[in-house]
Image (tube, rainbow, N blue to C red):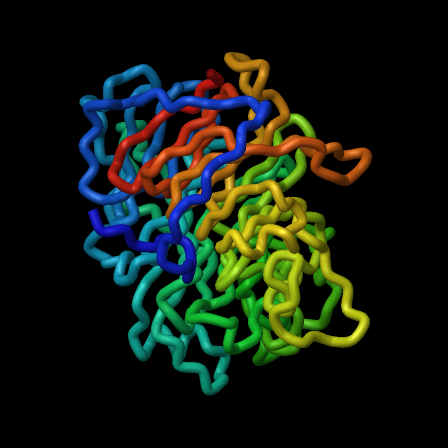
Length: 425
C-alpha cells in the first residue's frame, strides 16, 4: 500500500533506526471490532457520556458509525453521513472529529468538525470585506440525535456555529473536544502549504495556528452599529483575549486559548490532572508534544520544536515543548532527548488512566504516523520535566489517531481501518 501523509507536510519515510534496549514499559496491540468494514480511513473514535457504552467511529470521507463496546464490529450502523458535501478533497481534509455535549444524555447534542470547498458566496460571507479569496473553509456544526432512534443523527437539526476560511488543503488540525471546564476546544493548523507563509500562527487576528475555546451554551454579540454580529456561541469569560476590542473582526480573536501551533493533530486532557496535551506536527526537522496553558505561545513559526525556524521579535517569550524528536538520526545530539528514536509525523495521544494495566498509569502515550512507532513518557508536574521516556512498541502500520474510552483504556486507529486496544505486555 502506498503511504500518504495525513496530519502534515512530513518528509518521505526514512529507514527506522535500531531501537536501543530499554526498561520503559512495553505494550502490545489487541484487535477489536475485527468484523468492522470501513471504506475509508478512521480518524477518530470516542464514547458519549450517556452510559450506553457505544463507540462512535469517524471516517474521513464523511461517515460516522456507531457500534456496541463488546461487539465484533458486524453490528455497526451509520449514525451520520455528509459524504454528499464532499468534505474530503485533499489528504488532510474531511470529516475529522465528533464531540458529545457533556449533557448529551439529556439534550442529545453533539458537534462535528469538517472541511468544505468555498463558493464565491461563501467567500463573501466569511471574509469580512477583506481582499481574501481563500478557496476552503473549516466548519463546526451542532446536531441533535434523532428523537426516535438513538443510533441516528437528526440531519435536519444542524446548526453551523463556527466557520473559518482556509488558504490551502493541508494543516486542518481537526479535533473537537469538551474540556473538564465544559467548554468546547478546537485546534486549527496554520492554514497549510509550508513555512506558514501568511505568518498565521503568531498573528492573533487569525484563527489559524491556534487552539480555540467556545461556550456552546450561550450566544455572544460583538461590535455595535453596522459592525454588530450575533454569534452562534459565547466566549468563556477567562479566554486570554476576551477584553480586546472587536475592531470589526480584525482584532485579536476572543476565541483564542493558545497559539503558535503548526498543526495540532490530536490532543487530550489528562482525566486525573486536567492537563491538556497536544501533539503538534512539525515541518522539516522536528515533531513535538506540548503542555498547553491558557494564553501560551508555543513558538511556531519562529521555532520548530525547541529550535530556530524563522526570525521573531527580539525578546519574545515562547513555551518549549515537553517532548520533541527529530526526523533524522544526525539531529539526535542536539535534541532535548538524544536517546529518543526518530519519526516523521507525530500523532498525539493520551495519558493512560485506565485500571486494566497499572504499569501504564501516568504515561503519556503517543506515536508516529509514518513509522508506526509508539512511545511514552512520564511527566513530573511539580518539577516541570519528563522523568522517564522510551519506545513502547515498534510496528509499521500507519497510525491515524489514538482513542480513549470512558474507562480510560486506550486504543489506536490504523489507516487500513483496523482498530486495536493498547495493552501492557
